[in-house]
Image (cartoon, rainbow, N blue to C red):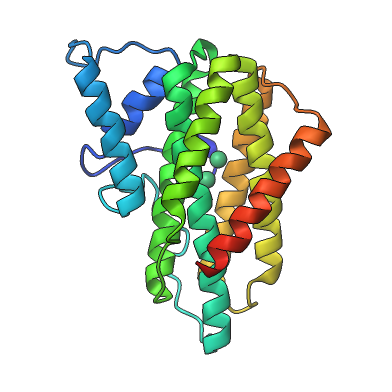
Length: 246
Ligand SMILES: [Fe+2]
Ligand SMILES: [Fe+2]
């Protein structure tokens, strides 16, 4: 499914806190459709709600159906199932980090010119989060126990990048998406040939993440120098290797 066909249609109001966060991140009005301005307490509750939904894996609903829906489960050996679960756990942690990154940026960034792109990207990250969690359940596995730590780190980095400037904030999104795309491509090579369900999810995620990165650069994001990207790669390798197991 392409970006242009993305139609957010949350079945409940679960995206409201995230929408507020992105609205804030992108310099939007604090006033919801009803016209009431958000108080500091509203914001604190909204931010805490986003953290709980992401880490507890409850309350988020995908705007798009999982690409795996309707496809039959493949016959995986126990070893293959454990390996795929490890890969999907890594991808789920990556999506937890994406939520934290947007929330961190929400605290400090303005980004008025890219409001729509950011909002759409944030909605798509929720889709990815939900799809990965669903696939993990289907594989009889669970999210990483390290997610709270990675959430905290990503939140802090997002907030710092946003505080420096919008260009750095967007550049951080672009460089992060580049890292994510690299490990998604690696995972697509590693998946058992038969595991069509996981493959379809990762293919759609790869398409979305590439677009998020391209949009962030097109919106004026700084293309980070290679040494900075190398450090980010190192951190992402620690994340992927630890989340695979724990
Ligand atoms: Fe994502
Ligand atoms: Fe993304």
